[in-house]
Amino acid sequence: MSGDGDTAAITQAVPTGWRARLNLRPRFSRVRGSALAIAQITAAATAAWAFAHYVIGHPAPLLAATVTISSLGLVRDARPKRVLETVIGMIVGIVVAEAFVVVVGPGWWQLALALGVTLLVARFLSPYPPFAIMAGIQASIVMSLPASQPFARVIDGIVGGVAALIVTALIPRNPRREEARDGHAVFAAADSAARTIVQALRRGDPIRAARGLEKARGIAPRIDDWRASLDSGLAVAGFSPWLRPQRAELRRHHAVLQAMDYATRNLRVVARRAAYLCEDGARRPVPADILAELMRGAALVGESLDDISLQPAAREAVAAVASRLDPARVLPGATLGEQNLLTALRPLAVDLLTATGMTSADARAVLPRV
Image 1: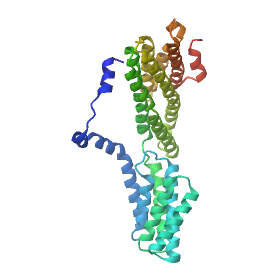
Image 2: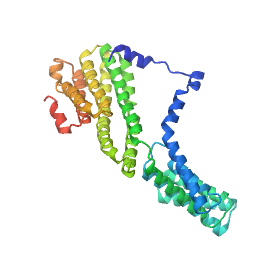
Image 3: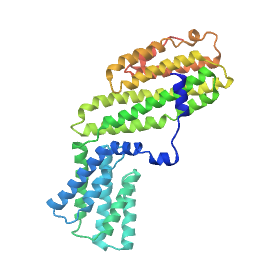
Image 4: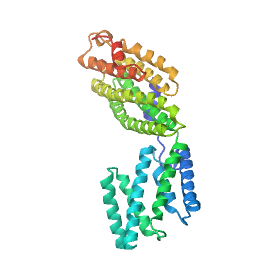
């Protein structure tokens, strides 16, 4: 954790204006990240439309395609449960609107009545707000299009929903890629925050300490992203026969996530105490070095997401630091604030050890008694 690296992280130029607008890298990154989802949606929507048109004989099975596209989407959460909820919501809207078309016919006031009833029914059935919105959209489509055979569009919606569920199982989105990217983002954010805190302690810099605390607080949304992609990945891996071998690895990553959730919370405690200490402008290289060593072990934990063989090395690196975390020995005669900072590093070390696969009891046993 060199000072130059930290300075670069703080003073890195951010492109603005026309340079930001002409930067094609994030655009290509979006396309690359959504390529499999686009292929999945295209295959499912085409298959649903073709089945409804050529097999069932519907002349314009628009809803077979729209239900498929809307239920799959390009969102992060591709769990079969979420897909099924969206499908049910849209079919509810189609059924209610079809009933109004059959009973009272099309028209502006019929649209208003059908839309209101659809939204009321949808909100009654599900607390998930997009459920009601999807139902309302499909109801509006049904009320606006010319009617063919009664309830033919309900069949199209069911065909689209079935196609979405089948393609979720047979052409699944790779859960490992996205969740691993989110996991590495958590470790990178934690490392960036720790670097700033380390430099603040080494220089007695209150501005850097405040910046480190700000960075530590900013890790929480990345934890949420990782949890969402992991939960989605576990659900898809349990539903798709092709991805079931990945479930054990996804569960291991989930255990790392739980430990890192606690670790980043404790890193915020460390950051707050460091910010308080740095107000006097005194240099504190000893706690800075200990935090730097701990985060080098955390970096190995992050690398072990891709290579489980690195897990023992990560455990040894963190344990070597944790075994020395006795404030009275590390900083004899330290102030109460310094002792509190070193004490705050103990639960952080325990959380990092549990991230390497140790039980909480074994991880706490590594710490010296105080």
